[in-house]
Image (tube, rainbow, N blue to C red; front, side):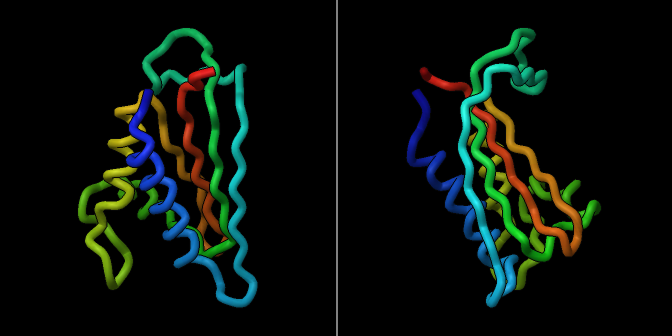
Length: 122
């Protein structure tokens, strides 16, 4: 079993970042979870397919540049005036400790999608 509190904090940090990135009047955040059985993840260090739970958090915010995407998990990297830049570094560590992966898809002015892939306990 995993650390539910740590996973909850990861999701809250991602949602907080999405809230800060969306326009106040027309911002949207969607959260979707699904079970996937035909997904093969080399990054999970397994050679066989496994049942995974994918949680996807998508926003229509300002997006993240390619340069910043490359640094998103670097400790103390931030583009915000407040904060210390540890949220996504910690998120990656927590997801790694649970044998999963965290994936960011984003383009400037197009929004961001964050996908968390974790092994299913079902």
